[in-house]
Image (cartoon, rainbow, N blue to C red):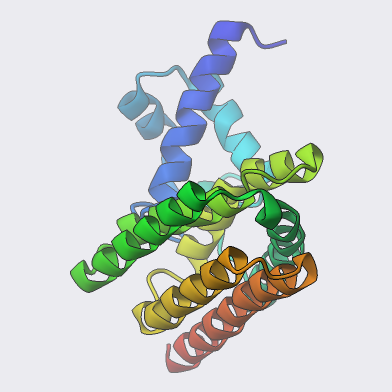
Length: 223
């Protein structure tokens, strides 16, 4: 049974590896050194291995028999399944949250969307990805269904990591996403019905899935 101290160390390693998958430092298919990660984080091998096992249970890394650990390479179909689930759940959450979003919340979301545009112009994938997490987090924050809200919050880093490791930075869809963000905010500000907001968010996510899947398919065909 893990002690509180060991659990904290495990979380430290988990966060360290997760962030490096998100920012592209650890790419899909890349081998990871357990000893190296332990040394970089200043954590012993046992909690380091526990953190990697946790990431394995979430589908982000895989232990290979007698061959160490590597970042998982997901197929187009596996990626699509994960993101389709996110689209349905987030659409519901934002639809429920929309009537509770304040003018200040919407203003903050617009500012984040503006920062995402700046990150796109600068070619900064990490800042763009983090902005996307913040934008979506603002919109679902007031969701009164706490179970749904907590589920999405726990899974958002995983979704970002999966998308980063499978797709990477897809700048060609950035402007469309920005425009969809603004339209969604406009409709929420106008008091659009819950069902409309839910559908807009779901369509936003599903459109991204389609663009990502097509881009990944072309990349695979060209390889």
